[in-house]
Image 1 (tube, helix red, strand yellow):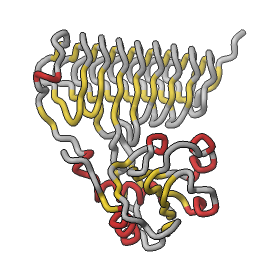
Image 2: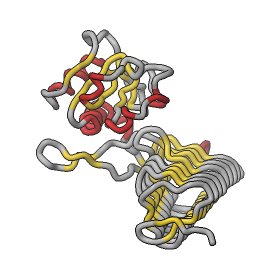
Image 3: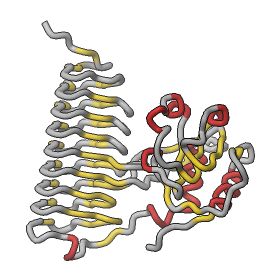
Image 4: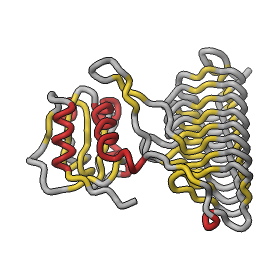
Length: 305
């Protein structure tokens, strides 16, 4: 598929048609183009990005580096120093919704998955895939990878020595919606990837969603059991163990050497420190420090005697 090259003026014009209360910050839109939707960390002059109110309040780490072509943000962006983020900015009441509508309108053919059988040149000689495996989008497999029957992979890279069970779903869109002006749910498009490090094991029936923007990451030597759900933009650390029926909410960050017991649920955007333990059935709703043990519903720290 040919790279995208969308006139920025067309993007801005469509945005103002969708949301007449939106405002463009900066000078008149120049003769520039947008080529991709990207996370702010991955922005460049051809990127369409968005920033939330919460992120804007903690944006010190984003003030350096390349600027996005166009960023969609909350109205408070007008009163902040937005120029380090982007060449141009659109402000509105629901930036995630407006961003999602723009990506859906202009970029849908580039993020929708087209399913196909794996090509011989995509399978290294030391890698084994069972009957029923299907690919979508760009899929890269390392050496000595084993994939079980009826697993589907899309928009992902799989490191050397990985073992993936049967009936897994890796790299499909996650669950994300915004309410529009009518009160209906509008699907947030997922354009990211899944990156799986070396020597990772993934059990059967497990689902690992692609990133909304950026990547969902399973780092080296992590072990994931059967029937685990890993939501978009999660990062699972090295040598961590995630056991059956666990659910990792979107953008959770799991440190190295963490143990997540069966049926634990972790709220989105949490951070779990290195060498921590999450007990069986725990419902974790706040960050967990290094080497802590959390149990119960709601999750609470287990004090050492």
